[in-house]
Length: 63
Image (cartoon, rainbow, N blue to C red; front, side):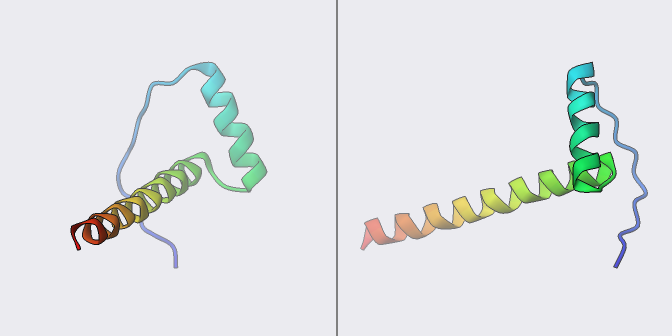
């Protein structure tokens, strides 16, 4: 299912970053916007997993 995208997102970036973004998006077969969204969501998911692990670790220490 496609997501409806209705917000504009602008960033200032170096030419090197933009070239890297374009090359990576081409290799992944994604648009640059979709690649950025994918990477941010992936990082957010990994941080949630890290937070959950830290919470579980804290619970075990408290026992």
